[in-house]
Each structure stands twice: as structure tokens, then as C-alpha cells.
Amino acid sequence: MEIELQTVTKRYGRTAALQGVSATLRPGGIIGLVGPNGAGKSTLIRQLTTLERPTSGQILLDGTDIVAKPLAMRRVLGYLPQQVPYEPALDARGYLRYLAALRNLPSKAATAQIDSLLVALHLGDVGRKKLADFSGGMRQRVGIAAALLGDPQVIVVDEPTTGLDPVERVGLRNLLSELAQTRLVIVSTHIVSDIEAVAGQLLLLRHGQLVFNGTPGALLTATAGHVWEMPIEPGGTVAPDAALIQTADGLRVRVIAAQQPAAVAEAVAPRLEDACLAVMEGKVDA
Image 1 (cartoon, rainbow, N blue to C red):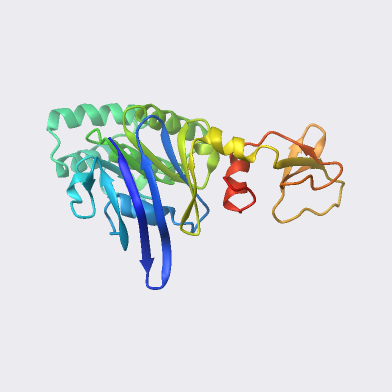
Image 2 (image 1 turned 90 degrees about the horizontal axis):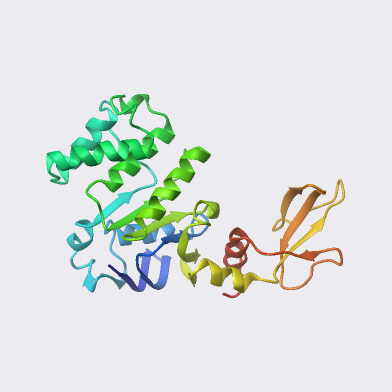
């Protein structure tokens, strides 16, 4: 399965939310769609899930134009939006059975899959509890289960770790990573650590433009030699684009710069978050 974005552009009046985005997406690892708020991530998600039509350009699913034939995508899509819809009067199991019926899933197969998903997402013991009584993180996990109903071949999740605790985040990351080996899984996020260990491909958006498309390894290579650390004295000032980190030796400042920013600065290996920031802030041309 393959998705091809061909110069996808989306305008709202005079504002260009996406500008000529082109990329090829395939299974084999999570595809991370990364960028700050307002970068165009959610706009691109809406084009991919056929909720909106691009102003220009094409989106092809195995060669089929999903703008002209949206059902081609909808038949194979599992989608988790930022705001998870739910019916507060239903319990988790009843809500998922309702969605399975809407998707025309056979009853026996739906029951087996719902049982499996509830266990996988640590909801097996609360399946009869009303959604109105769920915490935000629990509702998020129900939304994830809903997105996976019917064994979709294209899975798109928008900020999936909202409200999840650290253990739940790791569990979700592992689940999506396993699915991504045979399915096309796209995760939109501004939290790079959510996908750092499992992404096979990264798309970085800035102001609606695709500024990087490649592997995490290639991005780290491009950023090598641009990340520096140096100590900071008590009461010292920190530049707005620098990051404070606590080490065994005290507070240090982490800076992204093409040249050594100070005599005491030491070059350090970039983390994926450093690399993403460097490209999105225009400090490294990847």
C-alpha cells in the first residue's frame, strides 16, 4: 500500500495552510508528521482522511485519486482525531459495538476484535463502565480502539498521546509500531519523544511547507556538529532559543548553532528533538 502526495496545497482565502507538499508514504515503520502548532499538520491530516479537499494537487492511494474517489480511502482508513468523539451514556464495549455496526463489521468478528482491543489498551476491566465516568486518558484509549476497528490498512492518528500517562504512552507507541510493519501508520505530533524510537520516516512541516522528508538517521546526520552544551552560572541569562538541562554537574545550556557559540561550549551528539528544532527553526538545511 502506498500514498503519494503530489504538490498538495490548501488555501483558506488568502492564507496558504499547505504549500506544495509532495511525499511518498509506505508501510515499514511509523511515519511521523511533526511540526509546531500552526505548521499545517492537522490541515494535511484532513486532506489525507478526505475530510477536506485540497485546493490543488493530488493524493493517490495505490494510484487512485482519493479526492475524486474518497471511498477508496475511507474503506481502508482508521482515524483518531485530536478531539475524540464519544457517547457519554454508553459504556466502552457498547460504544465500540455501535461503531462496528456502523462499519458493517460481522457481529462475531467485531466482538472478538473489541475484546482484544480492550485488553491491549488496558480497558478490559472497565468495558462496562459508562464513558461519562472515564478520565480523559481512558476516553483517548477508547478512541484508539475505535480507530483500529475493522483492521484498517491506513491508520492516521492526530496527537494520540493527549491525556495518556507515561506507561500508556509507551504501550500505544509499541502497538502502533507493531501495526506499522504491515500497515501504513501516520502519527501527527509535536512531541518528538512519542515517535523517536519507532519512526521510520519523518515529515517536518513549517508554515505549511515540507522542510524535511526522510529517515530519523538522515536528519540526525544533517544536524551533527550543530548542537552545543555549556555551563551556566547562577543568575546567568539564557537565550530564548536555548534549552536548560539538568546534569550531574549542574545546570547546562543546550544550544543549536552552526558555529561554536562560546569558548566553553562543547559539541554534543544531537537528539532527534534537537534535529527537528534545528530544521524547523531554519538553523540547519536538511
